[in-house]
Length: 172
Image (cartoon, rainbow, N blue to C red; front, side, top):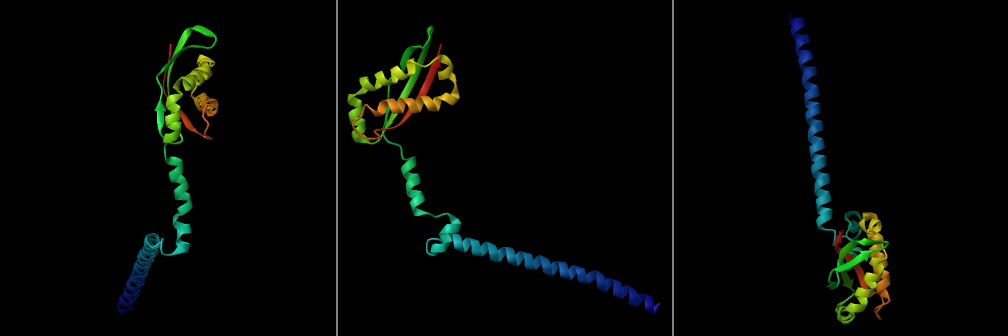
């Protein structure tokens, strides 16, 4: 019986050892996660003071400035809606509202004086389109670019027209 007790104690000791080893591994993993997380957080918060950290956390001064310039919207000139016959069909009409984004306030003042010329150019481009082209969502960007190119010649300032927006469209 004494031998059976020794064997039982040996088996219990073997069972306890993996538990201690498993617990040690778990503690090591937790410590590793905390250390790496803390290091990452410190790098993020001190990225401005440590130059090489910027490349890992995406802080680029030049990139931010160009992003701000791209998202800045210039003054927008809303135009009265255009009502016109569609090309090739005397019974179909379209009502389209357009707004034109200008480069700056100086160009905006010039544009306000030239509204009839701007409206004529837009009406010329839009009335040449068929109903299918106007209704096709894929061709909307092409129409906007075509309108923008047509209006570029109206202004004396280079890139006076930043964008053209179609704000409303009804076809009957």
